[in-house]
Length: 225
Ligand code: SAH
Image (cartoon, rainbow, N blue to C red; front, top):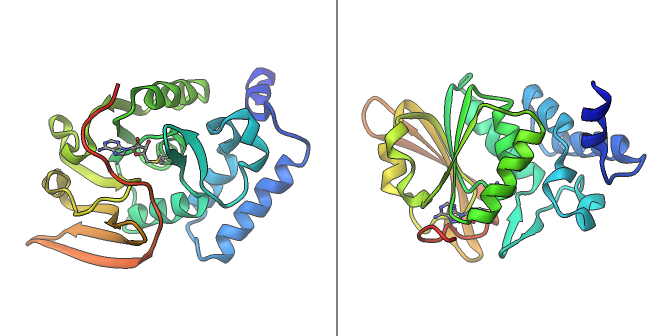
């Protein structure tokens, strides 16, 4: 790795980082994440660059952390689990992500699929996420400032769609934008009662799998400057 790139990756983090990162991977594995590619990508993605410097020392804990604007960077276990569910039936070329946030899940996905299209409603979060991905030289991502309830119809259909905020109902637009065989991973519910769901577009209609209780910030309405 080039010296400069190495400096970027290790900025603001102590000598324990490699060990701490290994511990996180071990923990995800023990909690049931079994896709080796997903684990490898999480191992090499510098999560500390996606949080405020003051929180960088906690970046490899398996926990969500605040990123401002009442939003959080997703818990590594959730990022791993949702990525694994998307990839369960094989590689994907076009993936739509709703809720860019810090860009951490985006960065992980971009190393696992051909192309990522990522929608965020808060402009400043999106701008910062864009900068981070450029800094990490992850170039197969296109960003859109908009309302995730509408998906990104102009570029549909998608082989995978991932939503990183909890929706009160499954947005119809996202179902419409799934390619045949396409997979949608989405938390559904409100407040304390939220379930992670996997919805697949079958030859006729959709199949649904409920995967257990989760905790996400809400999918809100409309873009915000
Ligand atoms: N995966 C992100 C999680 C961010 S939290 C990360 O790891 O950093 C959820 C994100 O969804 C927030 O950034 C929030 O602004 C965004 N969001 C909420 N409602 C939205 C909507 N309707 N359209 C697009 N983004 C939305």
